[in-house]
Length: 421
Ligand code: PMP
Image 1 (tube, rainbow, N blue to C red):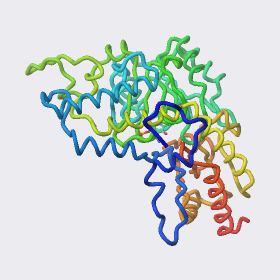
Image 2: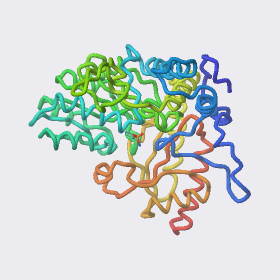
Image 3: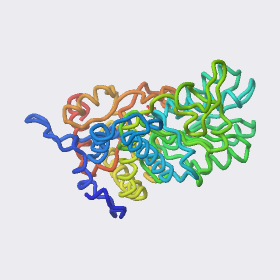
Image 4: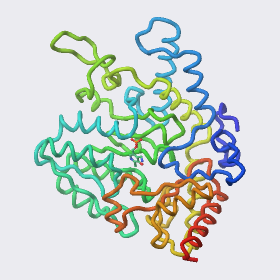
């Protein structure tokens, strides 16, 4: 398909999209079936335009940015900053200055915890999280709470894996300083009503951080509509290279925050014993950044824009709806998270009888169906579900209903091997 055009393809043509992904078009070899890649929640595959953008940077204009008064450096700087503008528009930020390039979601959340957190959180303050957070939206707050004497509380889940909003209200009545929650659960697939939670949290006077690692790649996300203070996400889950990630923060907040790391690029004036800081976002981008990766993120955003994020969401809703229908037919199937496709994103976690998820995943790999097995960096959630691990299939723009059929066939193979059916 043509990725240069700004005309959204309607609706999404996953088979045509697949042609843009070299890794999905490899010859699997004589004894392997064609690859069905169902692990995009961990990291997505990359279309040729992204690979080429990275390659082009290294071949034609590789140079350090911002300080080089020569053509290559100016070109690299221009593309790096252009990527920032693309990202800002993609999430509806009021200004590109509100987008800080980081390595990933984890770094973005740690940045907020260690700068905004240290400045604003005091002994006895309450930070509200949820039981379904990824470790990267739990551990940074645990470290901060340990350092400051703040208290952590976690919104409970309903039996079908949604957030219990009554419990949220109970916790909001205790005047928390911050509510930090995931927009989409990477383990359950639950799509959270982030705008509503943000509205309630703000009404209670709390700051709001949204972990957008699983939402920004998969559905339209608009920070002004969400009215969040911070949004964290990773490029590698949205077609871009590993090493590219974004922290969005409201400008006034970013300006008031102390720097995270000190060093080159983040300063205005350095003396031997004291320094002053550059304007945002440079204040938070100490040292040489991952220039090529950021440029690759810009190319990924252009690719997604050409598809149209509404269509990306519609496509995933269709594939995941079909997956839920077909998976319930598999003997021994336990599905986690809401069964309504409108209430989830393209992630489906399950267990098959008492077969260990690692065994399920290994058998699926034998059928060349790539899924993830484990706790998915959500150990507290696994405890809540009463399991040690799940098998997780996650879908993206290049997955089709046929991929779901291959998954289901492979699960029948697992059942046969384990004598369940
Ligand atoms: N939050 C969520 C919801 C995630 O799914 C992930 C990645 N699995 C992360 C945070 C962490 O992302 P990264 O490893 O790119 O920092």
